[in-house]
Length: 194
Image 1 (cartoon, rainbow, N blue to C red):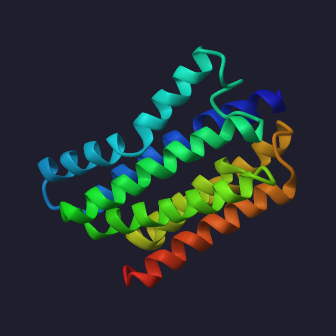
Image 2: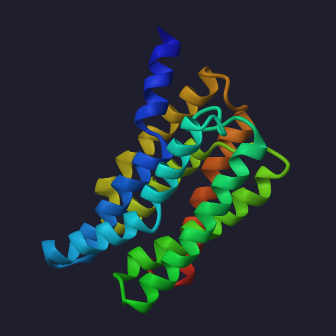
């Protein structure tokens, strides 16, 4: 039963879905019209979450990846390279087309996090599940204030699930969460968004 709950938690609070929801809420907080919000949401998703997700699904189907969240460092490497390239392009597009500031700075924070995690991946496996939920909780709390702080309550649940499934060590789970929150906070503070 514990394994089923842990698997369900990991699947529901996965980095792709967490990113999707975070982008939607960042944009809704930063734009004045629904039309503008839909435009920025679509563009942000097309430059980040959707292509990586489609690539991963395609590679799983071709049996080039063992799962949507691969275990081996070599399999994760190509995902990191694609994510960093797309995020770098996304940063440029957001800046050029004058996207909402919080969205642009979030893309910059995302790029920095992906590069740091990609470097760590060369030597060690870090928990992206805890990293993404921690980053989301940090960004949403900074954008929406204390009414969004409840998202931090999902962090121990995700950490427990990753540990229960024996996919990470406590150090990998904690490092993912702490690094993500630190990078996001540092970038948002550095750009004067908070």
